[in-house]
Every structure is written in structure tokens, then in C-alpha cells.
Length: 456
Image 1: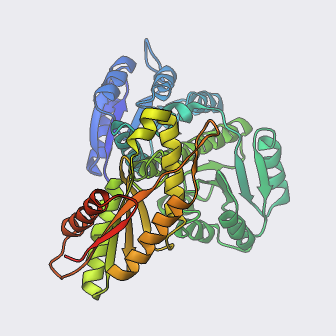
Image 2 (image 1 turned 180 degrees about the vertical axis):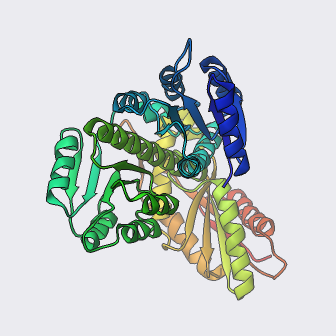
């Protein structure tokens, strides 16, 4: 795994040392000798991770971290504080400023590479989600995503897997006031709880009595339901080898016993923030996708999705030698609805028309808004005669009952329907739609409120 690493330190020798270690593992390294230079570098080219010295003149690492985490463009970038001061107070201050981790000078090579790889892996996932969300916004789709969510204080749901009662009680006392904790001493039952519940974090003790905790980590990472769930390991002083394996398997963070309560609270808060941030991004991407393929007024699929779906349905029908029919439905004299009663009335009529059409077809059929007052119905495994029956059902259902307007008045309206069908192996989406469109034209010119089919 490679990535772009920004190394920030006011001492050139320290910069060169970290640069050499990271370059040897094929990371793309850039450097900065001050806080101001680091902020400028992040604005110019967003790195995948920042290794940030704490003790710098003019602007220290804590202030640089705070500024990076308060900027929507860099809030998601992992920041690792690098300091010669192995003091709990400094760790807490850095984590409260938004730092994702700490490395103490002299930096251990294994810890350096392991931490960088782990955090870059998370960053790459976040980048993909952010890119998809940004594409939706550029298309004019408001996905309601708040880029500053990463900075918010959040109440989390935490599953603790620890079979030592005293240890579990200390975790509960430290976190219970801010978060909802469930302690599960049985690892197998914990796996079941993790897959069934809606958790923000799992805290796993590495020294479970009768079970390999890394086996539980592996199981959590192998299941779709828990693959992205943050995992925080609680380790002992002699667990460095197993910890390294856990980090390679996807563990997000760890704490060494004896646990300092403030550091525990800060690390838990960081993991929950990152989880909620990623969840929000996924939700916004899903919402953007739905907005991109559905019609905002009727809730039906839009023309873009219809074209893609029809192309795939036609390909399948031709390969399997099955029938396929398409209806184009158009409300008669719809313009007069808007002109006489207003656009709110027109929208209400179109929404009701969509509901009547959707209720007139099978589950496998697809009703789409083609544009304006035109709708398309895709009927797989349906020949021309059967399509005529469906079209007549739609026509009669529309004509049978008046439409109710927002002001309580009612309005009678009808639809005309044109039918096109798959006739030969050389048919394309365009030829089938042209047949249906030509049939619709005949229905309109022939008096409206009727169904017409084009065989060729």
C-alpha cells in the first residue's frame, strides 16, 4: 500500500529521517518545516496522512491539527502527532485537537509503517465516498451531507468484549457517562451481538482467557455487516507481536494497559466520529444515487434509468428468445390543467397518475416518467397482445375516476397509450421506442383516450 505522506517538523534532520524511512517503503513523501507551511501544503495538495511534530515555534502541532480538523476540505485527513514528550497530557491535548494517533521519538520503524498503512487504508475509503458524494453535488443533487460532521461531539454505542470483570467495570466507569456500553464476556456471543446490533465501536481485550481475540477480529472483518465497524484493542506490554498482526488485519486503534481514562475517552471519541463520518458519506452516496435515477415529483424511475434498464432487458430478451413490450402513456390535454388550475394542480394530477399506473402492472414491470406528462412502462416476457391488455387496464383505470386537486375540486382526465414490442433479433431500444411513439401519435390523432399498437 502506498500513499502521500506530509512530514512536518521544524528540525530538518528529523524530516530527513522520517522521509528516508517512508520512502524506503515506497510512500510518496512531501515535507514542511513549519505549521504555516504545512497548512499551505494541505490546501494545495491534500495528503493521505500528516505526520506532525508537536513542538514547533510560532504555531505548534496542536494548533495545526485544530486548523486541519476544522476545515471541511482536510477534516478527514488522518493526523499523527510525533513528539519527544511521552506524556499522557500531551496525548490527550493532541487527541482533543483531533489527532488520530501519536508516535513518540525516537520513532519505532514497525510502529511508524504500521500506523501509516492503517490510517491510509481508512483515508482511501473515505476519499472514494467523498468523491461519489461530490459528483452528486456537481450534478446539482443535494445529498444533505455535512462535511463538518467529523468535528461534532457524538454519543456512541459501544460493544465491549472482555471476560475480566474488573477490566470491563473500569471501561464502563470511564465511558458510561458519554456512551452506551454493553459488555459481553463470551466472544462467540459478542460476534452475534456485533452482527445484529447497530454499533459505533467494538472494544476487544487481546488477552481473553479461552479464546484467541485475533480470531474474533478476523471474523468481524470477514462479515459484510461488521467489515467497516471500528475495532479498538486493549493490549498488554508484551503483546506487541500480536498487536502488529491485529493492525494488519484491520484493527483501527489500540490502548496499552494500564489504561489512562482520558486517553481512552479521547480515542473512543475519535473512532466514533470517524465511523459516523463514513456512515454519513455512505448514506449521502446512496441518496445521491437514488436522486440520480428517480423522478423527484412522482418517485418513479427517470428517463436516465429507464434507458439503461430497457437496454439490459432487451439484451436479456434477445439472448433468451423471450418477448418484450413497451408502453408510452401520455395524459390527454394536460397543458390545460396547468393553464387552468395552476402547476400545483398539475403536479398533483401527475403524482396520482403515476400511482394508478404503478397499481396496474406487475411487480416485474417497470413504470418510468419519460418526461412531462409522458410515462413509459417496460413489460418483460410480454407479447403485443398481452401488452394491449395491460395498456387497456391503465387507460380504463385513469378514465374511471376523477383526479382530486389540492383545493378539493376534482378533474376528469384520460390517457392515450402507444405500444411497441420486440419483433426481430435486430431490434434496438430506439426501434422499439419509435414503434411505441408512432402508436401513441396514432392514438392521439385518432381521438385520444385509446390504445394503439404498432406491430412493425
